[in-house]
Length: 219
Image (tube, rainbow, N blue to C red; front, side, top):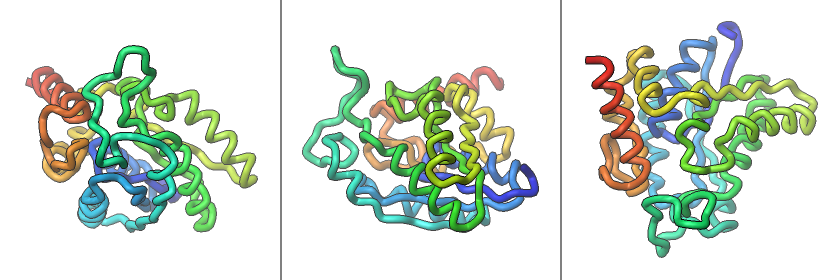
């Protein structure tokens, strides 16, 4: 893989940033692709651009506003209160954006094919996936086959975080030499606060608990 190019689906959050630097270690050339899809905090795209600049990788943004209008969810609808946990009787919290990873990876595959890139990296994880169905390993494997058939092209979807919990993701960032950068410069917070975030939304709690676990293990 070290002699090939790759494309990272890149949000500027903890997971995709860790994947960006993982890709830099594994591939000869790395490109980053971010999306504006009507998310409340488009600030994440500018943070992603800044991180890509620090990583010295090419950065592209695409506008996909349709995604934000198709479903009713707390990440694109400013009037909807955010679920702090999965409600009783529901499969996933209302921060789930239906079809998001399906759309992102499909568009990324077309973008990659046009540039002769077959390796696509995404930061989804089944271990810490908050009930989101499009973060599961079965979905990624199924989509990989579908994309290959749809475009008659041999893509490889890489998910380096698939079986890692958040503590192990922090460990990987540390191994890659970017733990401080991930902690300081990324935005995982559902309330749009960079770094350690608001501290109380589900994404911030998961991130903080993972960091505390990793640091306690390291010390």
